[in-house]
Image (tube, rainbow, N blue to C red):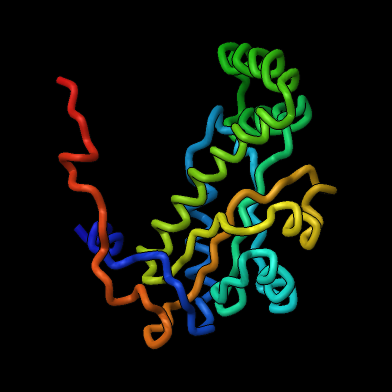
Length: 210
């Protein structure tokens, strides 16, 4: 299967060569993230696409000085909502009604259930829940990049507060949760490039309950 071949090909690139990825491929990767499933369909996050080299240079020191930050083509920052609010929930439900062209009683009851639940929770709990949804889209982006023959490096090793400040995320009600440099591997500098992929066997990973 082509997709599985691509997933066997991909790895977390430890060095990138600075080559630019086409805007078409980037758009496809972002679209895959946009189409990813999220809890209640709320999509409680945004994706910041950093093309500006100066911004990447500013982020690198607060991301353990990892070279992929500056040597990538595009840096995707997945930033989750800092909390759930009535306005944010209503906006997504209203969008659903607008696109589908009708209101559904069950859907409206579900809206009221969320409105009576999420906004009353602790903001940190809500952020953690939203961040989990961002990770689903993050995974979709990684898979889409592999399908496009483009390298990525999932990065959690960074100072979120510092990245938030550089990008002005807190003012937008967002908090960065994970970074994704997108580019092409530097085969001369990447120590990982020729090493075999290591994963648990299916037997060790999967339990079948019949």
